[in-house]
Image (cartoon, rainbow, N blue to C red; front, side, top):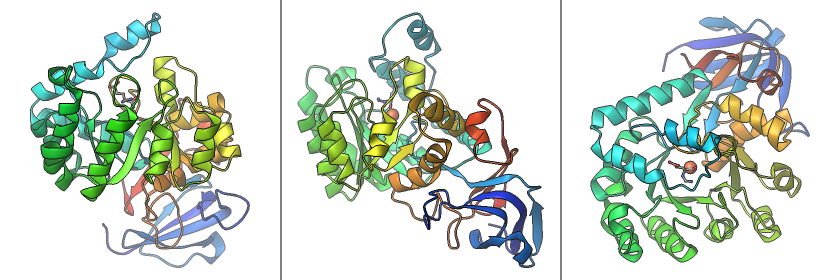
Length: 389
Ligand code: NIG
Ligand code: FE
């Protein structure tokens, strides 16, 4: 954190997400924003801007809250480019490749894993992501899950224990024993480094009974609940998440009316991960159905070497608009305030007094350009905790 005040002046369009009126983005035109001690201290019309120690001239550009990427698997080794190529030639995605990454991750040194997380975190920051959640899930034994989370915790407070990603090969014919390991020694070793617990609740991974047991153990250990649900087919995950008060259920690609109703009557966020549908050539989730039912929707990258090897929130915003019929405003909200809701964070995802001064200055006059100009590096400058990056 840099001491002294910093004024971001001459903002053509300031997205505050202040939730004050009908416009969910809380857009203010011809605005300025004052940063003090790493926080937003004031926003208002540029002509009323207070004096400050330093000044950044936004030159009429749009300023947005930094993206909150609430779902990422960054602790891994190796890549699965060949698996991607096979899919693009017609293979189906099953999640079976997770075990390939587990083998590579177990064989990697701490420094190699740390370097990969650092590289991806750097990519994210350059693309405007100022808050990221990072999961374990490619260790799948006590030592490798614990070290994955220890390394993740060097980069974020939002670390998630995903020991229940798949049943590893050595437990293939004893899934009950693996659930016992996850709830017992693995959770004990992981919990000191984790804020959240997650389960891949899907055919071929963990069923509802196993998922419920694991999430309940995590809750008892003080972890918040989130889960991978209804990605590859319909299933019990979404309703289980709502039943357990999950902060978020993620993917939500195959939903029944009962799933949508359950979400609509809950505080659980539906986090959509269109990078996964893009990279697995699958049908996209029905975002409109969720939004029209009043469900809180977030967007995240799902950055991982198998199903979605993108670190780019602007790419996900563009996909959400073009492929899921979200409006640009809905997509930008979902990538900022929605991600914050999915992480139960009130200090990020908005630019109002008291929020962390995490913001993006675009090389564009409006948030619309994020979807309107897909694939273009529009992030001119990022402030993280008030510090220019
Ligand atoms: O969110 N669905 C499970 N986990 C990841 C995929 C992980 C992988 O294929 O390595 C996901 O898509
Ligand atoms: Fe995931």
